[in-house]
Image 1 (cartoon, rainbow, N blue to C red):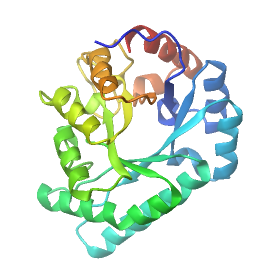
Image 2: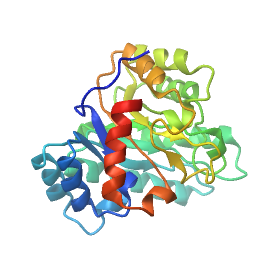
Image 3: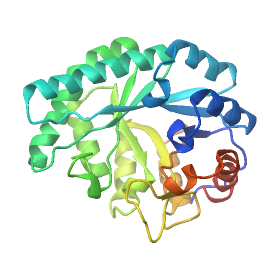
Image 4: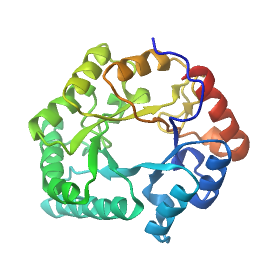
Length: 276
């Protein structure tokens, strides 16, 4: 079991967590609450000078931790698969402009297409953009999603599958983003986190909680301590690998987005210190 967290020096929050705020407000308010890192979702950058936004994050005293998201490689036609590759190339350019060292990949899937085929298309898509990512100094983090998303969001549903894909690709620029919401249920989780660490592939760690009952499988994530996930135990497994990066709060929540975001941010910091 990991030791309790006593400060916010490793606290990163995703812009999607406070979705109603424009990124400028999120930067200012995160900094005021002592948040140390920000993962930026691409929608938050629309219509903005990306490099200037990255500088503003740094000037506020925070690290740009990663850019979300790339991926969604599988498609039924060659033209659509190429369009996905092109979009990931744009994401690499955006990450470079922002100063993000990592792009998180939500890998994608196609309803009714065999998962084996989608997984091969994911591998092909990642391999198509590795050279550009390496030239920009940007790592690619495969995020396995909960099996409930296997139809359309990700054919990579376990950490074992993500580790196997990293081994097959065999590039220092490709690793894994571990998200407790998607992986907490897996009986192999401790062993596969250890394997991920041995491979040098643990690139990111995302936290939130699983509410019971869950009213929306996408947009009803909980604050740390509100649900079923043994967050501190999983963090312990992650830290045993030597991982020393940020603990990234990523909460999709219709209930929290509908409320006062300043109050929500205060609750995030409190929950992080008490339950992570």
